[in-house]
Length: 264
Image (cartoon, rainbow, N blue to C red; front, side):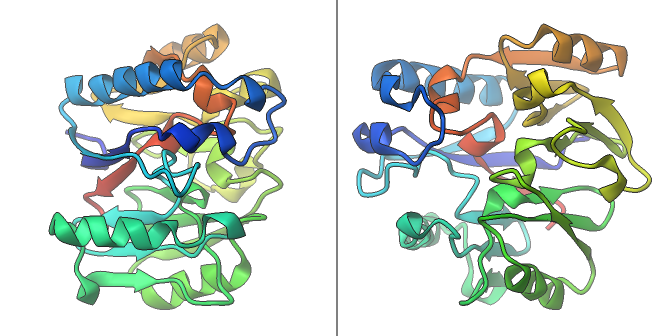
């Protein structure tokens, strides 16, 4: 399999999800029952593509906790426990640490915990199979956090990428074979030398938050036919999923799971 992970962790949306942090004007219209149905479909797609999914229970204390990508970046050899730039989410990672240790998915000896004043959120980290780690310097991840990553991961080239997006992955995602899907109006392709690009227009930018499922299959949000067509032209097969209720919470396809990367 040519994807970067074979297992992922997800968390069922809590009742409190309607109180999540979001700039989307439709936030007040979040339908929690529909969100749970969409989440179930999302998980089913991962499983249908041979991905082992560990499902965690809802965490009512933290409304944004369904967005599992942010508190940590997990690997089969080592992991990163972030420190939220969004203050209201701090503490959420402690809940996750406890659950991962109970499941024997986290070892202290192989874990980097970002320390104050550093901040790192998983949505800013783009993993590749090229010994490169791209990290968005955003409102959620700061330069000190990036430096802590750089000091720890000596075997990887850690590249900081300044972005005006909430997270780097709001505007780009790594697919396979040195290929990215990217919205140039949101993230400058020049930050990623040596890559090939599936380029989207700003109107399709939400679809550039995509997940590579392996075998040239790419999970994207439904409703973006131009993005689907461009993926096909580049030799990929788009798999669409309705995540409208998570879009309302400023989340995308990658936000809903925490892969356990084979390359970390």
